[in-house]
Image (cartoon, rainbow, N blue to C red; front, side, top):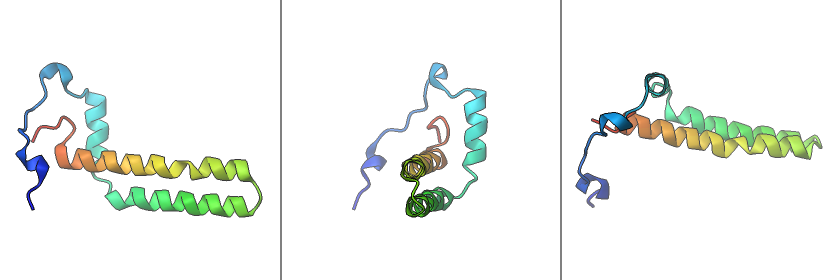
Length: 90
């Protein structure tokens, strides 16, 4: 089966749309983090949320439980940076 993304033309962004030095530095460091760290962080926040819920603090459990999608979004962003680089240029 052919990958749809392989048919796309790869263009590098113009100089006015490139990442700044701070974003590039952060992305270079976070790209070294294994992707499953974010998955485990999400699962850990779910487990912590359930634990806090069992102890009876529903508001705190909801707060902790809302971290899971944030960790998963960080994981997706991390994977995109690993695959495409900080500017999408290869």
